Length: 107
Image 1: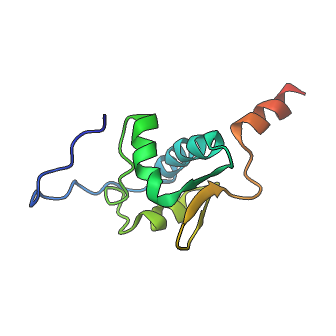
Image 2: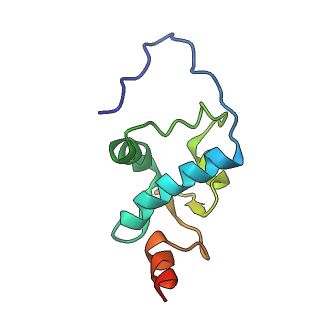
């Protein structure tokens, strides 16, 4: 299970630099969830809990200096965030899934 949230009134975690390398690594983990989804999309509201279950670490946008999760998702390479009442996360058009990339490399 993910670590428990900090107690109320605890200082926020230190902010890390959202380097291109960190964003790319995070995008890879987010896209793994997207690729595993039956329809290739994940509801943005369910992403943090699904992410921590799958990857055993928290998807914490505030640690990376983002006020909102959607702002982080918009900066992840290859990830598309679609706003709305049921906001979704999917693979950006033109971004190749790991399965498709492996098939291309097999030729």
